[in-house]
Image (cartoon, one colour):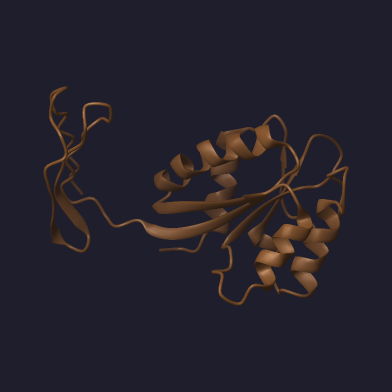
Length: 171
């Protein structure tokens, strides 16, 4: 597959996006504040919905900024839903009109209400979320026999990328 990148000049503005097929762009332009790139033969990205549940705003911000780039590199376009409350996460899951997340990042310990372990137990038992779709985040000990993968803080993004390759559906 050939991918070509064509930077535009500083004063170039958005003028057109033309599709040659559903799988490739022939031209993409951008404003002077955004790098412009022209793609040729780039495959379409598969959409994926991620839910981040963490009581620390900083953690949610870091994941919201880092995860889309990681998923793009894996062939997905990520939408991030985030909440600092396990109760809000369950309300989201109980809403029949909401798309259900494909992957969850859940903080194990959240001091001001039910912790992540209880949320995970509910996701597994009541919502039938497969365990491989849940990634626990922890700043310390996370010995739990139900967990397949724990992402320790501070994050090792390279380790996360390897783990995600195993958890995401094969294309």
